[in-house]
Length: 313
Picture 1: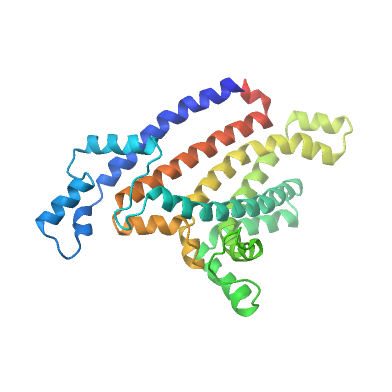
Picture 2 (picture 1 turned 90 degrees about the vertical axis):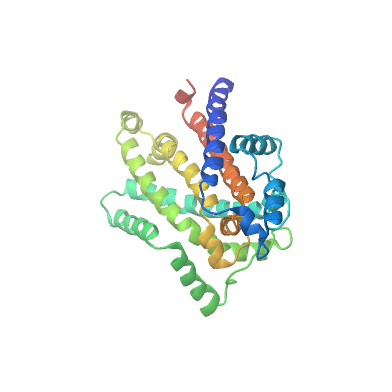
């Protein structure tokens, strides 16, 4: 297992370096001068020159990249040119909100997608299979912002059961935190549940036709043991990959949901950084997202090895 983990880390580190080069290079291709945006209405040459020197905009791009990479590797994410706050502090405040939303959404997606996909595979061609197919198509087709507005109208405006937006920290009030996060989690997890549902069905249909499943049934094992212990364990291997990638997409794709429900998370931080040309914030946010994707990919590889020992070889 240690050799398996080492080989994955040997691939992850160069990948992260390549991502850092792409992030920094593409950021410099964006139109506009951040020094002009920071100078405001008083765009005197002295102010612009001072800002360019302060934030090293006057340095060659390779020098800027090396300085930024060394600071990022040491844990210094820089300072926001818009707010003047340390970016690390901003990330520490915003990221837990989006991570909580993404984890709750993934739990809902797995709790709905895996059992529904398994039921559709076991009842192939029956009304259950068609109902699951319609649910999956609806989950993929309905826009998240429209679903969020409809849920707010139903549960907040008409029924008055849940708040329409806002955010309450978990340690301040766990119950209020759950009530404020339930609707956005349902919205964000609906599309992921549909994708997981369809992939679980396809994977299980393939596994249920394998020889080892027929052999287990021929031995007289109960159908529940055959499905759960033999078929499902092998059928979940591609679903693990999908769930890992979906979790990464939830972290980076919660912008619309956070805007609809007024959640002060990572998505709003990204939007503000892009519109204000706050290069340091955008670079730090994208690099943090890349690190999370690599960590999630590593977790998926370890889950492979736990589900199927042949992968470790």
